[in-house]
Image (cartoon, rainbow, N blue to C red; front, top):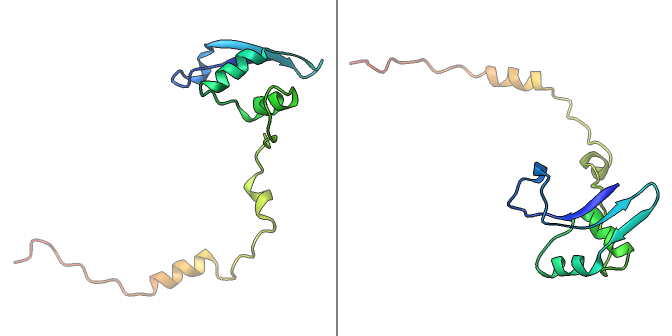
Length: 111
């Protein structure tokens, strides 16, 4: 099960300390207890829920709005087909750069 808590952003997230527990959710048994009045209070003073908690609050009709996609789409899936690689390889490019003659080096302390 998951606790729904209010945390202070100035504290590290892994510290395990929170300001207030406002509910819990068990996805296996579908049991959930959310204290709507406290959640509305914290949202009114500027608290920002995670995408998953936001969707849970909409589902329970504590707040109104559209659901947010909680899982981000990977870039490779988002872009579609992979563009073709030009036939000139990196090795050919490196050889093209070496064809230029290097400039002769002059010592700095030359009089």
